[in-house]
Image (cartoon, rainbow, N blue to C red; front, side, top):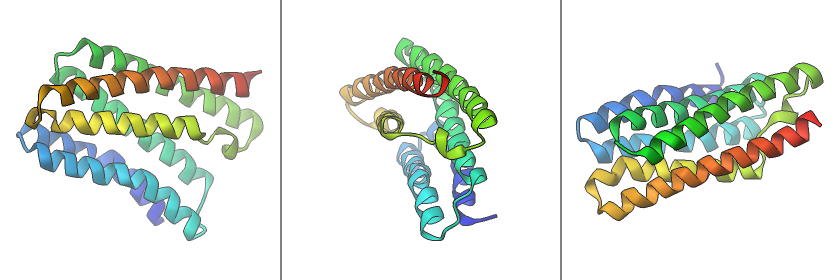
Amino acid sequence: MQLPNILSVSRILLVIPIIIFFEYDLHVLSLVIFLVASITDYLDGYFARKNKQTSDLGALLDLLADKVFVSTLLIWMTFNFESLIILISSILVVSREISISYLRLFVVSKLKDVNEVKADILGKFKTAIQMTGLGFILISPLMPNFIYLGSLGLILFSAIISWYSLAKYSNKWIV
C-alpha cells in the first residue's frame, strides 16, 4: 500500500485513540491525536501528488476516510455531550455525507471519472470549519465555557455549509 493510502486509512483508525484518551480525561492527548489525524487529510494528497501516486482508489479512500472520521466523532460527541446543537449537526452532517457519497457513486458510474467528484473549495472550507469545531470540543473541558459554545457554533455552521455544498454539487452533477 502506498503512503498516501496509508495516511487515509490511519485517519480512520486514529478515531479510536482520540475517543479513548478523551474518555480517560486525557483531553490534550486526545486533541494532539486529532490534530495528527487532521493533518493526514492534507498530507495524503500532498504525497500522492509529489510522488506521482495519485489514483482513483486513493481519491475515493481519502473521501471515505474524511466521512468516517468526522461522522464517527460527531456520533460519539452526540452521546458524550448533552447538546441539541451537536445532535442536530450530527444528523445534518451524517445524512449529508451519506447523500453525497451515493451522489458521487452515481456520477462516477455514469461518467467513469473520479476527478469529477473531488471536493471543491467550498468542501475544503467546510472541512476546515468542521475540524476546527471538533478540535475545540475535544479541548473544551479544560477551557472556559465560551470555547465550547464557540465550537458548537462552528459545528452547526459547518453543517449548514455542508448542505449548501450538497445542493451545489447536486446542481452540478444531476442537471
